[in-house]
Image 1 (cartoon, one colour):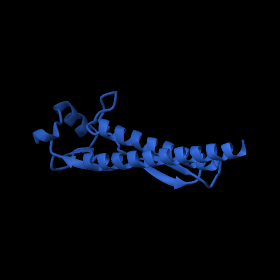
Image 2 (cartoon, helix red, strand yellow; image 1 turned 180 degrees about the horizontal axis):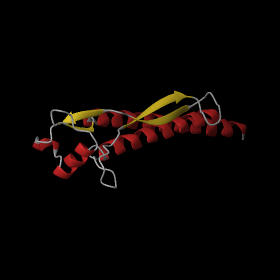
Image 3 (spheres, helix red, strand yellow; image 1 turned 120 degrees about the vertical axis):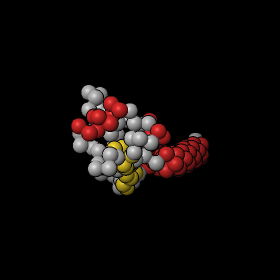
Image 4 (spheres, helix red, strand yellow; image 1 turned 30 degrees about the horizontal axis):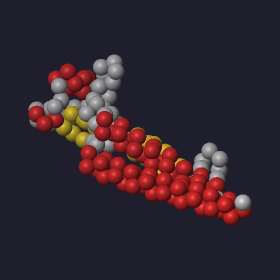
Length: 147
């Protein structure tokens, strides 16, 4: 019975990791400069799931691993909707992140896909909570039978 709780707990942790990566992606989708002012566009993160627990070698449960994605798009600095300041454009030129057409390399974070992933992660989190609650009720019922 306790194995079922461990599996649910690993699912909860995995979905929390996924929500953290999504929040990070949405919060930093417009980040183009590093703390020192150099051009360093944000690299979106993706969460990859695998079966089992890599730390203990247990076959049950799920493990979440966060990976940085090298996914960028080209943006027109003259387009007001892109909102790229002149100082950022100069830093991008210095870093060699402007192509021949004058387009700037910026992070590619699809907000719709991120929000869809967040809803899916929330539903999975809720499902894992339901499984953990059901497992606790079964354990409680078994203990009452023994008493």
